Image (tube, rainbow, N blue to C red; front, side):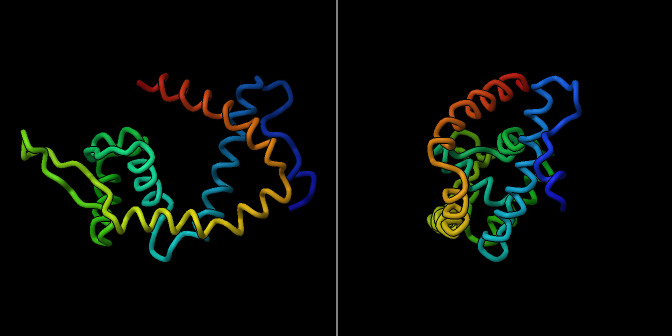
Length: 157
């Protein structure tokens, strides 16, 4: 890839700034997912990691429908992802005490360890990022990205 393609801003001249920012975020997401996949434990996909991370980050147990909604995927897709995690012993399905038809996905100790191991495996990549982008830039960027995420999440409800 040429330097011009790598450094060219997202969007076309005259595009709204919001579109250009969202395009940049989309491109970053694709690049980050591919890089992240290369560092995940063998047999774990970005989608599977995302489910573990989501449940642990929020410290919740959720139904497959709730997870599908949170991850913006179809319920059959989430069922397949959860089944693969369950087969690996990384999650378990727990019946709701008041309604045994409802089952919630819970991360097992092995799942939490897998998630933490994956984050630790990213240390070399994090070092490269830190060496090229100052920590203060990351600290400045995070609150803005958080606000965008929260706002976009509210729009979908």
